[in-house]
Length: 384
Image (cartoon, rainbow, N blue to C red; front, side, top):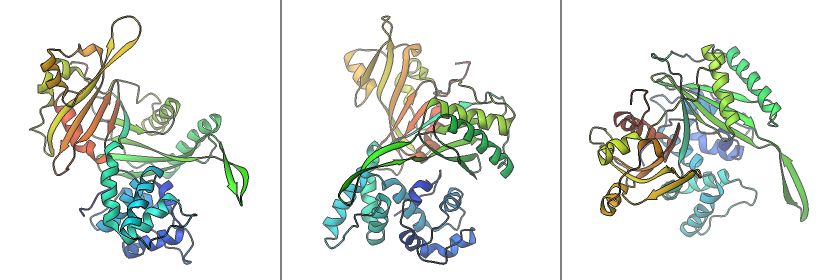
């Protein structure tokens, strides 16, 4: 299997859901490397590894990072949800009839167990699960003519940011004690923000008796600052209020301006109306073989706030056959593209929703796709 390089954090909530002994077993072949990077291994076999530290190491890999470890943690992170685990268990039992799974095992525990026995099986099931698993980011530009540089903030600044966020989280029923993990990726700085969500209560079965469990879910949001564009990207699990909190907190503490990242428009779909099928040309983009428009949405000017959704395997060919034309650029609100990347068997999807929302099939796809978006004019500029 080809090595997969991390472009974003491996979520610590996945790491902490793995049984400590099983996590140690998984990482033991890479102990020398991780120790050199500053990870302390516990003295007792069932003590916990510092998962936030491990996540920070993985967020900033060097040239010596073991590719096998990268593969393992990537697939475990991707496959540790109930929808994929059930299919993975069925495949594992078919391939290994003697394999048994503890009723107390978490989803991540199951994936680790199967990976240790048959990593190729996990990789194959992952490929099948990727079809409908997009990654969604919202983008906010500073509007600066020249993007401002940004270094890794001092720990006192991070603590001040955590305190400011805690005030908002507490006021909005999410509790305190958020944590921010920062990593430098060269052209980007990433902020992994761990915080609680409003309390939840669920019914449980304990020793055959009905009971209930009240708990506060823990989530991890990702924010990054692009040094080359002066732009903030946010992938958050919560509300518009949380996204505004991140924009304003980072703007105030790192750029001395709470409104440094306003809600300006990031994308435009004007090229679809202006250039037609020529807007999909990608021969000048290394790593991108073909782009097909598979859907668009536009406003209906009938006074009732209506929308039209047009879908097809190839929208432009379908419209040509039906002698239809693309709506005006001012009415377009959303478009879906099928993107064939070099070296990837199946096309991947990209959804652009105005004004600043992009949904990628997989995080790493954005590196190539963003080049295409910029060259074809899908990045909004005041002049266009």
